[in-house]
Image (cartoon, rainbow, N blue to C red):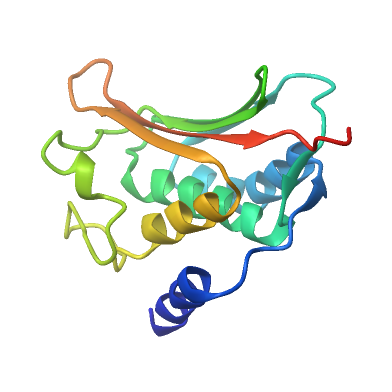
Length: 172
């Protein structure tokens, strides 16, 4: 917890992240590979899909991997056995749309506006400190990326979708 708090503080107060041309497909694949066994242990299907031939994006690869890891790990923690998590990368006019979607129980509408606040936790029955989504929000802000979270608690279509748009490398 202390390490994550210090990391968030460094991101918020530090210099700009050095962004480089990055293959977002490779970064996402690495994150999925790191967490697929955790998902399988909980009987959650983790699915990866990407449009073919995606151009490079401007990113800091380690921080971008951290975004994928945090969001996939959150989905695994909150999903139920039999749910699925989809990590999708889609071509858009001005960048790559990245999505981590799940078919879990969703986030209550009252909690949704606050889930990216530092130390805010909508559910206390799931392990965590309320730092992960604040870190994700800050990392993506430093990548000049938009970040949205949509969620529904209404069965049978409950679930959460986290989306962000990474700008293409302008030189590509």
